[in-house]
Length: 243
Image (tube, rainbow, N blue to C red; front, side, top):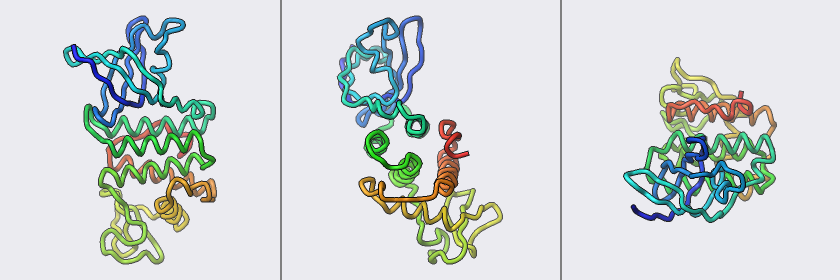
């Protein structure tokens, strides 16, 4: 048996046997993996907090034949504030769901891990609109994983956008009116501007961004579509926010 210590975020948790749970962890050092929390469903279980999604802690693990069991956990941050607000909870859930969808088992993605922490911290402790945080998170992970979008120039011809801009549903790129194809959808100037503003604004200045809620909802819906196009996964958690 090997003893392992790592920092990780709990992405999800599900019941296992009568008293146990299986949690999915994401660590900057070990990627995504499952671990068993034994007897955590009994009253007054010491590690009950470690079975909660959003829990960020230093986990002590025992590995045996490729299976991990949690032997201890020191809480770093619970992000409890996210669970007390329904909109924040949906957005936080979408962040965890997106992470679980795009990270392969034991795939190291330290840059993505940092982006998750930034998004969750701002979601929990800032006054930034939840939809803005989620759009910012999507744009940042697209960039971190090599899918950086240009919101100032056409992806096909490189010309500045003037009147119309379109999303190509085949490659997820944004193109001008001259370059769009039959399988593209038009993006309104307001949504395009929303993307551009959020993309170019750092988290510590996002609280000054004021965008109409209807425009934010349409922008988030398009971000959800971009995620689906890039990663072949339809996010379910944000349906009440983006549909």
